[in-house]
Length: 242
Ligand SMILES: *[C@@H]1O[C@H](CO)[C@@H](O)[C@H](O)[C@H]1NC(C)=O
Image (cartoon, rainbow, N blue to C red; front, side, top):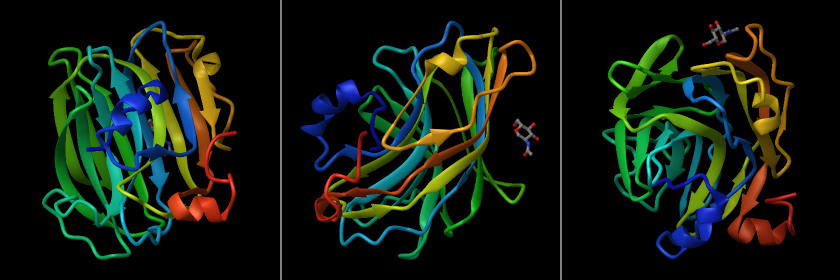
């Protein structure tokens, strides 16, 4: 399970997921409308070297369901969970990428997993269908769709990127970027730039809209190196927060 986006909930979840921790983040915490689309190109770094545990990098949309659901294509690596890569096999130096939805904070439903090499550009797209009420998630590499999932889980009202670790992960997740981030709302939300928060050294380009605030583009989000577990202790407090 790759859990939650709300730091407020971390305490609640920590009891259930050993070693849960989060790194630098870019997030949109509120909107006067709801998201009908997000897309961005994630370039994944080298797979971190950790003797154990799990690391997952993901951009997610939380929905207005209670408890919330999370549209969450995952790029992960780790040995802690044997069947971690759904339907796929990966080498030690590869990530596994798959479309996925976290339902009610406790259940995970995933699309097909595929091996991914470092420095691959991954087009991650979430589109809300007003008729079926489903979010369609697609993961596309070099123009080829490799994983897809569509589930009705509510309307998207928050967004965040995450670096998430579990089960005793100890290592450094290297800097990675999200390019050409596009946020499209059902109705114009001129407050989008002010709804953004960041932590842990994340940087982002100024949001721009050419249609009065219905569609926003953030050219580049850069998530810096972050360290966890023993690797963080070794580096002092460089790993998280700021
Ligand atoms: C950026 O994303 C938008 C929305 O998905 C797309 O229409 C556009 O072609 C993309 N631009 C580049 C340079 O990839």
